[in-house]
Length: 107
Image 1: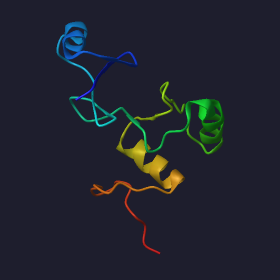
Image 2: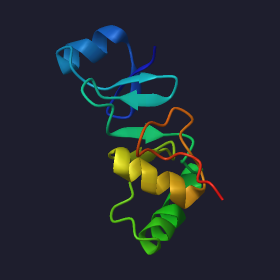
Image 3: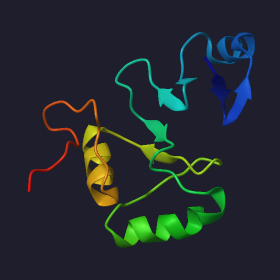
């Protein structure tokens, strides 16, 4: 398990000392909230850090209000609906999709 605090990798002790045992835990590159799983940063929908400005402009042009990337170029996913819209925009789908999630479209 990898612990991240303010964008940097820290020890388990430092993470829980600073966050008082509550916070975001990174496991296999995916940020997880202890309640709903959102928001998190997606590596799959991310870009090279040198392309962040270009990607923000392109996403805004496509109708996404405030696209946000971390320093590694991972794209912030705010909610299930946001994830569904992003997946459809990028031509991706969630292999673990449930009802209403981004799943392959027929036809």
